[in-house]
Length: 78
Image 1 (cartoon, rainbow, N blue to C red):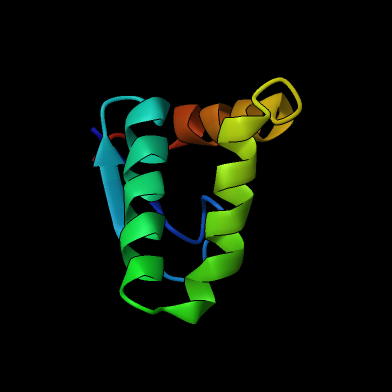
Image 2 (cartoon, rainbow, N blue to C red):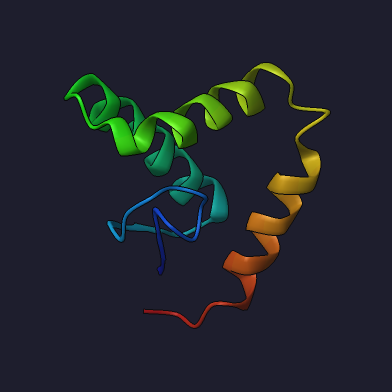
């Protein structure tokens, strides 16, 4: 299990996301951004828009995805 924060994934806060894989924390970040924006947190809107764009254009966004997978791989286990 490893931990990455919202900020490490491109968001504005330090909420921790835990997972066994980079995909686990990326998906947790996606859910967090949706919930934060739905609750009216305007600080999360830019990160949410970026995330939506990545899901819509996965080929274009592979650089971000590779960077997040590499950053996750370099983290120590919790």
